[in-house]
Length: 58
Image 1 (cartoon, rainbow, N blue to C red):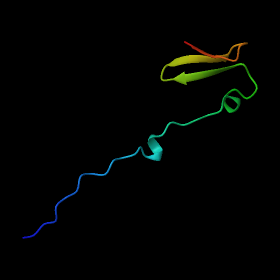
Image 2: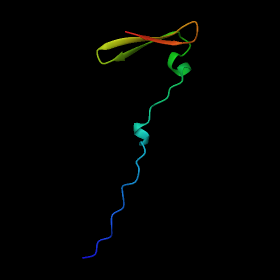
Image 3: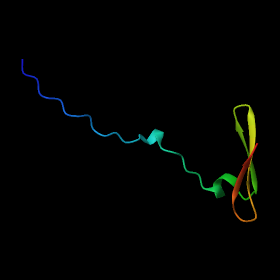
Image 4: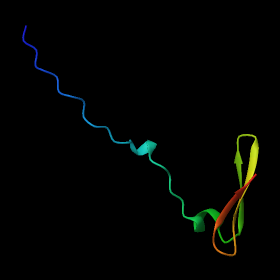
């Protein structure tokens, strides 16, 4: 029985489903300075500072 030699597995790349989702802050904040994010049983506040930095607090 002749079997062809098997080549090494090809390098895998992340599937599109595994890629991080990118959201522009203008879409997220919709003109507001804060948004509330529910994560499980916790609620977080994400806000934009006067220096245009993001702060996430619990």
